[in-house]
Amino acid sequence: MSDAATFEAVREEIAYAYENTVFFRRHMEELGLRPEDIRDAADFQRIAPTSKVHYRRNYPAGVLAQGYHLNSPNVMRFQSSGTSGDRLNSAIMSYDLARRQATGLGVNRRFDELWQPGSRPRICRFAPPNCSDVECATGFSSMEDRILPDGTLVLTVAHDLLATPEWQIVKALDEIESYEPDLLVVDPTHFAFLTRWARRLDRKITSPRRLHTVCGYTLMTRVARRQIEEFMGLDTPVGDMIGMSELGYLGFECHLGQRHINNRDFYVEFVQDGKPVQDGKPVEDGRTGELYVTTIDDGLIPRVRYATGDHFTPLGSPCACGSELPVVRVEGRATHMVRLSDGRIVTPAAVDAAVGPAPWMDLYKLEQDSTGVCSFRYIPNAKARPDDVTALEARLAETLTPNRVHVEAVDYISSERSGKFQPCLSHISAEGV
Image 1: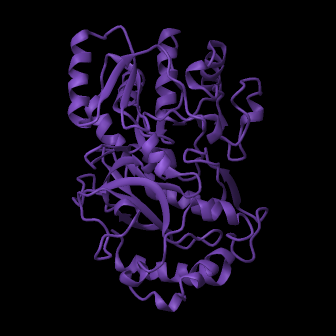
Image 2: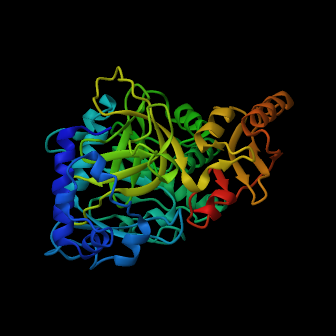
Image 3: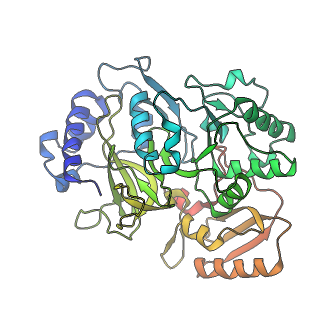
């Protein structure tokens, strides 16, 4: 997936991490390896993957490179939402974050106007509170208290999305209008919720500047995307971001709707079921694998073979958008994979494909219990008809056979402990991981 020139940069990253970080030196020594032992991609497979557990246990002193501390110039601190367990504290250099963001957004021509020389986009964020760096869940903080050092305004939202009171929603809509942003950075499920409320209140989400929308944090379902595009209009650029709080932009959606992975600022591997295939090579195009990331020229917290827990299918075909970054299909997190009794695995993306844009529902969640039984709960809207439900039940049964699936209409679905709303969960996969 990444080229030979990039691999030379990887060898430099390995040497740098070995010489300058306590954790990675110990990691290599436990494997009986030194940087000079890694001469090619086959040798690279000898390095056992690293994970969030390693960085959580060793943060900050064990993973920060020698000569840096958390108060060093240009260091930005982050905390993950805790989707896969405990929250992860991390840090990144501001210029590395900007470089990765520029590479990602560069695949989408509709976002070019945001980055004119000398301009600094005004940003509003509407996402789970755990994904923010300020207190925004209660709704009682002032707008000034929720403006980050980079100028981003973090909008308030309840920790349990559907329990957000109307006054807090009105406050978020008022603040967007007042702040006049160029860019909305949102969780797609959260933003679809906001558009439903705006429609109900006869409000618009506008700005005197041209609004752009970057979606991230959770899988962008077709149901959420439909609502966002219907409300905002197709003239509003909408892009799906592939990213992690500790790494920044790992990829982005181009103007033709394809997702591209950033193999310019990272060395990327796709590994089957968390383990290399028998010949030690990455999965073939068209097969799903977990994304392993190695940073390139990261002086602060270099990462080598970092297992992200996110699964993708590399498609191998060039994209007509003109970008050389590889095209992938986003499949979902390892802890969300539905495991069938016949041994097959159904990804959250496959479940979402079976659901489709579903104009007759506002939200859904598929949950697999520890016995393998699946329940599909959805919140219908005024367009729902019995035939729609019957057709969906048939598609889900076909996708999830031989496991049973129960479909139920409800008026409320809770968010996760992290504050995120995951459209697909599996207790079997979560307990296994």
